[in-house]
Length: 253
Image 1 (cartoon, one colour):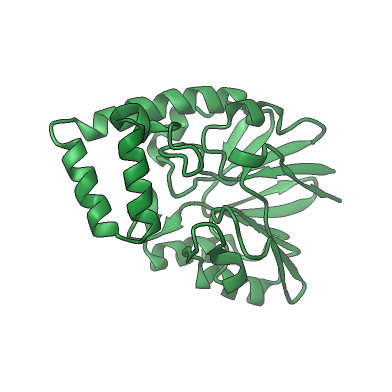
Image 2: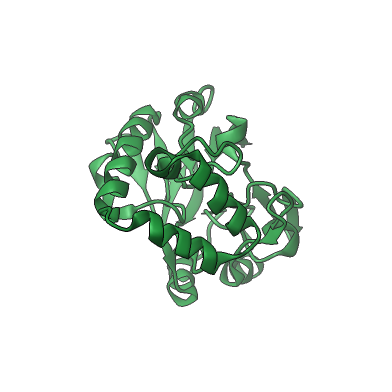
């Protein structure tokens, strides 16, 4: 059995269309939407609406952790614009392209920049969406936890620590624990390019220590200090920033 795993697709539809080649199934750990490409500020919803110069400025402010100034810039740009309608129209366009590119079967969960309410309109019969749920793939049990925890960035699908922990609890013991964000381990949550700690989940780490899955798979941190960390018998793996690499991570058994 061979399963390919991707995360942080961020608009890489061309790569996504090839991600399942040679695999029995594809797992997608979220962040399909590209709001703003921090490597190429001309790509994404934000520069399409407000131009590259404003994208440059907001990246500069966010990277410097000047979040209040970034929010103020955002408020000034959005003034007079129907924000919800503009974002939804752009996200719908991206979702239509990316869900059409997914192979059969695909098992997917949400990232923190995704909009879960729209997924049922685009996920075809070959795509199973899971969040706080389990599924058997090739005789192994996979559990899925979608979304992220609350941050100053205020991305679309951030929830409370309590809500997140409840989804982990609902999954129980699994062979492979799949999430968008990593467990709260310093080497896994520190982004070496952004030079900051992203939010990881203490509840995920506690579940790994308690239930001892064979693997814990995740993404979210684009340039982690460490891609893999072992916790007891569990191999914790950041499956990679698919938007830039275009390469899935492979799990075989």
